[in-house]
Image (cartoon, rainbow, N blue to C red; front, side, top):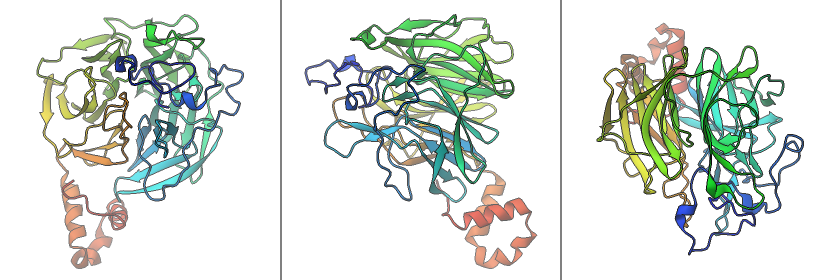
Length: 439
């Protein structure tokens, strides 16, 4: 079941009389009452088989509904992995999505396809952190059927066969085992921030605060942190910077975005609060800065997305409030003006939390999956498989010309060979898809 907030050892369903406030996103323990006997894995036994909590893959042309997954972009394709969905039974059981499949959405042809993967990624997870660097998907942390992990895997995407590889020979002090964290990429380094999980072992810089509600039975206690860890992809070394300024409070289920050398953090959950604060860290000097959010700006939230859409703008969508409302509002933040602007859009009846959001090549934001209702209530979660497309920047002149060429292809196709090769290639790809005009 999706990581219930009580973290009760026997994993029995919550009685109706239990207070809903005892459950929350920072403790949701995936599927644990399907594996009542499971104990937390240590470094020695984490390679053992984990009890089967995967959903059977039956989808052919479209990914299953899910929440807590990852999505990254490489070229004109968006890659989706992991997360969980409801079981087919009427009980409140959840299942992870298969660990050995990747769903690929071509943003030009607007079509999905599934590709199976090999390698040594041994468990399905949710709440992991995924990022693409030079055609390689890096997957860190997350939560599986026996608890949190801090293992990291890589998946080269520009090959005909996709093979997961665990990065085992890393030096330095690795992050603690956790999920619901964020990350940035800067100068061939992946920088991880925050999250919810076990207390760090060793002298980690930053703050860890226990979640008192996790002190249940023999289960390891967990909490929130504001640690920064850097993985240098050239040297394969973990490190922590010495930061300056006032750092954000520990948090999880926040959203991160990068513009230039700045790593931005908005919101997230800390204890009983879902925040609406905005920070950035200069990833050259490691100086933290807090930016005031006006009273008429976005409300506090967790499980939302923050997506860079231009060198000066970020797009905020959805999330979950302190009052347990699932949101469908969208905001555009202008960095140079320090200005929030709420956007009217056609998806106001499609609230989402714990979804993914990726920038497209033509000013779009592609939002996939997530939950459309209160994930923490006693009702069945409304996981989604819908792809929401937001156009937040003007389309380019090239895009409009391509649309015109496709709409009049019978008249103009004889002249296509005069086009530059990359445009001709794009047109031929588009012929296999559908028009995105009016999206």
